[in-house]
Image (cartoon, rainbow, N blue to C red; front, side, top):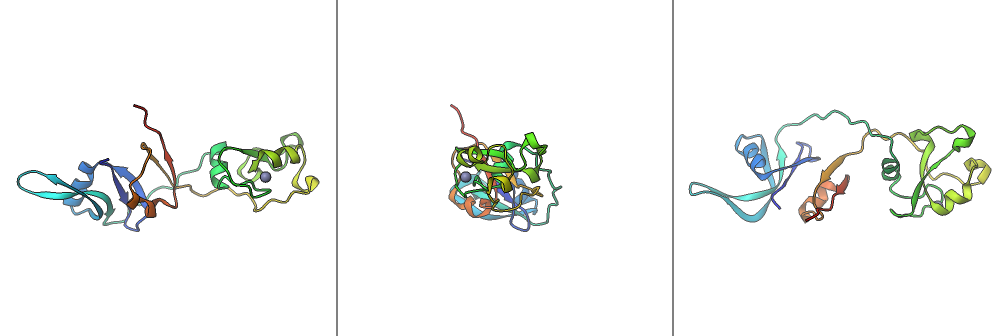
Length: 175
Ligand SMILES: [Zn+2]
């Protein structure tokens, strides 16, 4: 693993880069090492430890990304937790129209929630009031979901504390 986690000036995770690019940023005085690996890189004239995490020395402004309204993102917003009974789980979650489609309920952030299959079936074609099932919180459009895509199946331990806020999607590497 030679990828390097890049933090913003404010320590929020920005992206993942190659160590070559990270080293360039460090030598250009644009970034500092936050954590390095127990491994040397370099040639005859110099050697340094391989960076694992670097931090930009100036603030990088990022445009707010609009979060796409997808089933997956509704489940992420709701932490894969059934908004009716509180059951937690990745596999069994469905997306429920709070006001059912059949009653004119739109497919919007405000009208979609994560629901377990049991609650979804129980609620059926009824509103929460009709079904006497209260929502745990009012569904809202998320302003921003930090998203870093990492093509690995494991992450270095030291990255954890900078990524806990993030929805890290880990793509399994094949072959
Ligand atoms: Zn439920």
